[in-house]
Length: 409
Image (tube, rainbow, N blue to C red; front, side, top):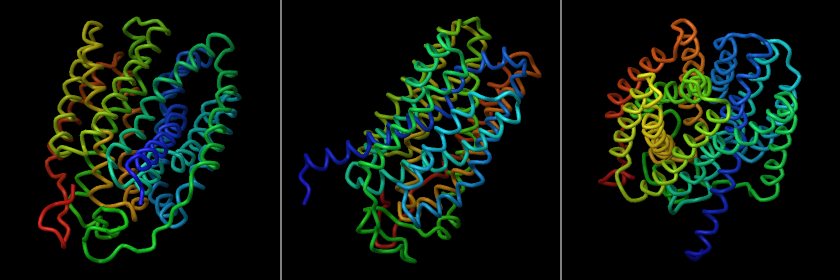
């Protein structure tokens, strides 16, 4: 039997491995690339919407394949897909340094869709949840901090490289990073297999300590659809902001260095929120906290939509704390509501909705900015979508297992 010290070391080791993976997979494919946006637009003369269409391709394609990837992860395990995904990111980053046309860039982002499906958030959440039972919320929070750390660390690597060697050579240097993490996964991550399958009854599972639902039962649950549609609007909002934030700050006359620093501080705020929310979920009601942080994020976007340099920091602080907590809570709620044994299939379908929202947010936010000449209208659209998400969030509730009189939390 594991001691408290051994349990903590296991929790920390697995969670940190998840953190490092997400720093690389999310950081390189989402936030890290935005540092090069201005330089790429200057070199090629493309519009913002032409550039950001790459993100729509990336995330919509990822959404379409996630249910299938999730099913394969459930059957064959998560380790091999994480290794393959990281290898693909490395190869595609090198290819990015060679692009000359938009279609070449779009093809690379289509490849990113497959890579991140194997080594992104869903795979990491499954990896951590399978291996950590006690204080699972804390472990998930630590792992998901990698998505924010990626936004802090990767741009700070890319910005000086951009200034010293240009954007093409920068991509080649950064292509080495995923290979280092891939080696760490091969050496330190052990495969895991469950002995028991999910039953037809909604009961607490002894192996995982969770309420385990079959895929078909989850699809029939109103909670599943509430989570899915909340995910569409929330991910549209945050990815629309993150993907366009660098260009928005340039619109407000920030220098490249100021914009990159603001970007990193924004991600640091989200990092703090993800870590703290993961710990808090082990002790208080996650559903109430979810609504509070969704409201906080909405207030922050209102400030962003005001298009004022004075309001930019209060807005980014509110959005950062709101979204950081939401991101951890949303993933934690999915695992604790439906279980981990069918998490690949269930999470894959939910990721489909999140990915569609993400891709549309990244692209349409830029399209609206091109049409109106400013990002203000784009952010007011986001405010409306977050209001809809807030109303839907009241339908996100725990499922009561048949062998318990109270919900599993």
